[in-house]
Image 1 (cartoon, one colour):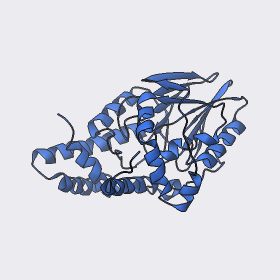
Image 2 (cartoon, helix red, strand yellow):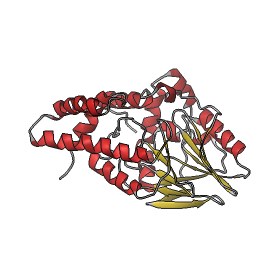
Image 3 (cartoon, one colour):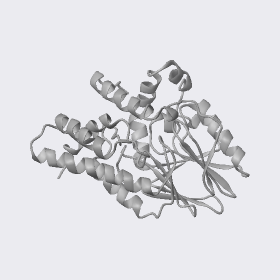
Length: 305
């Protein structure tokens, strides 16, 4: 696969660095063994990213892997310590390496599940992303040395249901947001949402390359709002409740509405991005990294009517 052009690499570096350093507590690439209980059947290893572990009486599901096999093995060890069963499922929220490249560290018997759009992104850009992350630091290079990602055992279109015994995980693809293949996990009866990058906790949204648009992200959030969620485990920010969904939608809607208004006024997209970021700092003073909003606003300019 050809390496991306210099301009693409620069843009990608800015995006990934913004994600990694949105909160220092969530930037550590090494997965630890400490867990937080999110709800009755759901635990989380908080880090880069937050890894969800859903435990039933017959099987366990792990959502996301950490960066590379060493981290994946740690996540698998923690999952085994929480469960009383040997059947293990693994899924990923999207194709970026900190979410998916730890898969080789899991037991070969783990059943890997992924939605079709995410798998397509993995096949198109997975190797490229591994190379990019390896180049970011010596530690990343070590963690990702020799990583080869296997194909999923199960690929689904819009929804897959995994019965873990006394608890059900609904794996959902609602459309494009941060990436094209963002996957959500709804744990029932806990009504816990493992939200990937789609719902965060006071974190400026980022659209990766040819992922979604502000409008498509809002459409995904509208579907999430109908799930009757009680707990939310994001990928790169602290655990919260259903109010995170409302807050995310309100923030994106505010940015989107102002961007389209400025577009109608003939304001250049780069100037609109700066203006909207300045305006929203007044309304959202406790949201860090609002300067990252410019790219998100500019994406509104490319939306089809």
